[in-house]
Amino acid sequence: MKIDFKIDYISQTAAHYTTFTLSEQSSRIRQKNLQDQVDRAQQVQSEIGLRAWDKALLQMKGSKVNTFG
Image 1 (tube, rainbow, N blue to C red):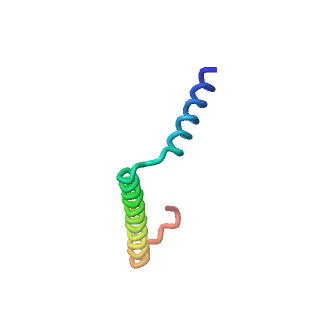
Image 2: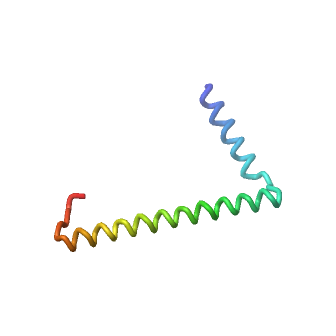
Image 3: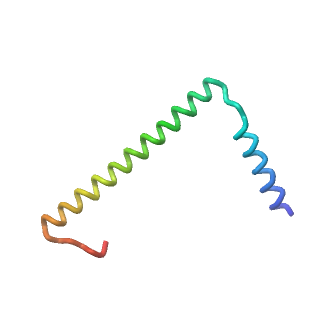
């Protein structure tokens, strides 16, 4: 019973905040934060790909291809 109340409260609170209108300043800050997160995610993805590429090249040049990991 207590858990049902908590879940209902959380869902109502989430619904309230998703329908809440933001001020112009808050909207700009939110958009900037979202863009920062996208930029960071792309940078990390790129770095991971480059590291994997470098490791693969080193292993192939040294003919030490590890097929297990």
